[in-house]
Length: 187
Image (cartoon, rainbow, N blue to C red; front, side, top):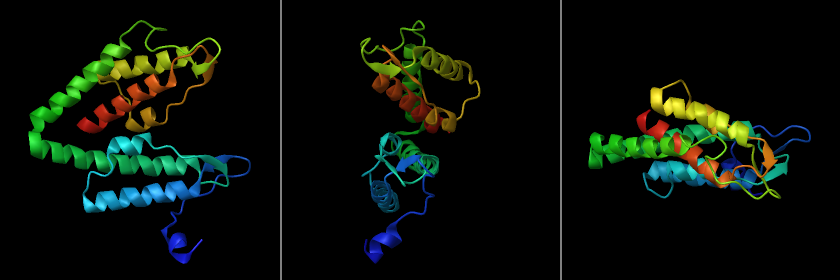
């Protein structure tokens, strides 16, 4: 590694022992890209890009919780900038209208009967555990309907165990991303 690469490296703690962490180089490269995009004020990256980024897991990588916390703060900053830009361009009423439409779309999905809110994978494949997803989505539906207390960090950090024939991961993750987007829109 050259000196310039070493100085560009972010200082996250390493995963301990046998625990895996995020591979350092992709994390450093993504964070450098995010910093440059934010400082230039370009649309090269969005809050959604930051929310959806994934890194390979390796031994001696960066501690996952530390990187995820930093990504959450970066996502918040990008979302705030996007909100300000959209309000300046289209007005607050249009921005709130978009957030309300997205929230209603998510609520419609979450209002489906338990055990049928998302597509299921085949009985031979693993998906998210249905009962756990339904429990979380019930709480999210209450948040969208009545404002029950849920934080962005809670939604970002939700994790589900796997089961054969469970819910399709991509659909559940997309809804969780939409909930975060709504929360950041009105934050």
